[in-house]
Structures are given as structure tokens and as C-alpha cells.
Image (tube, rainbow, N blue to C red):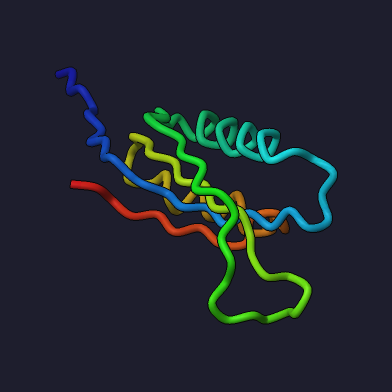
Length: 103
């Protein structure tokens, strides 16, 4: 008997907070890096939205008042959000990742 293994793909929205203080790279280079990582994880990118630079409400450092926010909508299997967080865990340019499922 041949059973087809079906994967249920879900829609996700991920918000990335990018720290570009000590980088010579452009923001577009960092976005391309995120797109490549999602492609490696076999996620289909639906939309990328640049939310711009936003100031923090609570400052941890006087000279660092805000970071860039990027929002990516993608479709992937349920294992991808955890794998994405694991891949970017040690990346110093990605300060925080919030991924939630869209219904």
C-alpha cells in the first residue's frame, strides 16, 4: 500500500527586530539573508513588509534608542518556526523573533 504523506502547511507572520549598529551591511542584505534561510527551510514567502526604524519605549542603552523591524508572511510546515528561531539564535543582528500562526 502506498500512503501519501501529506503535510499541513500553515500561514505564519514573523516579526524580526534587526540590530544594525555595528554592521556595514545594508538592511536589504539582511533581508536577503532572512529570505535565504526561510527558503532553506522550504518556506514559501508571501509578503515582506519593512516597518522601518522604531524607537524603544524603555531604553537599555542611552546611545541605542531603536532598531529596524521587518515583518515576513510565509507558508510552511509546523516545524519551521522552531527551526527558524534555532537557526537565528546566535545571530547578533537578529535581536528578537516573534512568530505566530495566522488563521
